[in-house]
Length: 395
Image 1: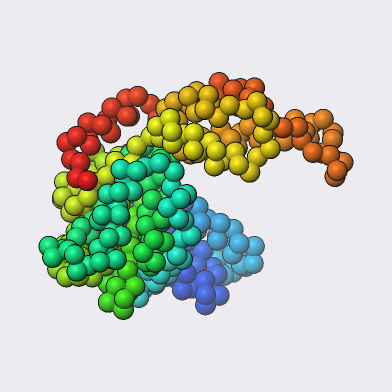
Image 2: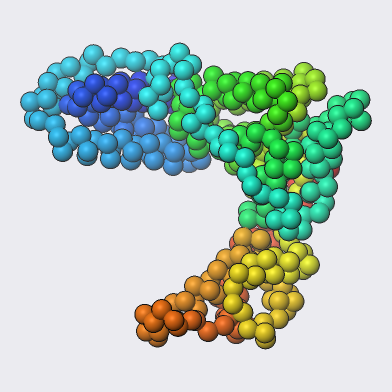
């Protein structure tokens, strides 16, 4: 067993026993084991300083440290001494970071968002090509499965610059087909499913399949797909098992899913980091690009509709000035203009008068914000997306 696997196993074992003893109010021993879990996690971070999910391990260590502070406020020195003498009794191989045992009893439902998203197609501004591809792959087969004798795609990859609507698109299609929506991300999987991740991946897909069998379409949405399914050279412990389990589950859906309406939608800002084994399992690979002028104009209309703006504000001109801005960038511009206006209103002292209202937003306000902000997506990034799309596109 590698050093990383041993540290991961030790951290999960210490964490489980710490949680168990914490619940039993054996505070001194719980503190000792929380400390050992922290030490193992930090050693893991030091061993792989460039590892993409180190922030997850650090977050877990911080959470345990916060719990230690709480316990130290109520524990006696005698309990601590007794814990130090008994810390060799803390076994627990196969434990999980969230306090579940290694027998596969982890509650995967705690790690996914299953609430139906309330996003309609109208809220997805622009993205006509992407919406058309998603409708052909998911919406139409759900509405008329009899028209698809060769089946339909079950794996859809959405890639492109950050802030351009990938998550929004996935949520909208879930609303359109009234599907159960299971939203997960790599950080949740690796932080809370550590030690039994592959079993919980299996549970998640079994739940999705059960939903489809009962007549309710299911969408498994995986955000930050590259973090979980990328081609890494320094994979740690259970990550390999998780990736292999995902491959197995996707094969079950793509090749043996019969007519079940179970779909995996993956979103990534770094498609070039994905392992080829995963790329080929996404039959649809769809670029979600930056907004064009018409889309930027519609976004400005949408986001400014709730603001009080002067009649001199030329949204067409603002859309031109916002060339290269993503959807989230444009929303931030509108928000920043409003924040600047409200800040000015409060500083004038007028805000204390409940009857007073801020002035209207002007073209000057928006121009100043645009001058102070740069697009979040560079030209080099756009070129990289275009090259990858030309090499791997599948609409």
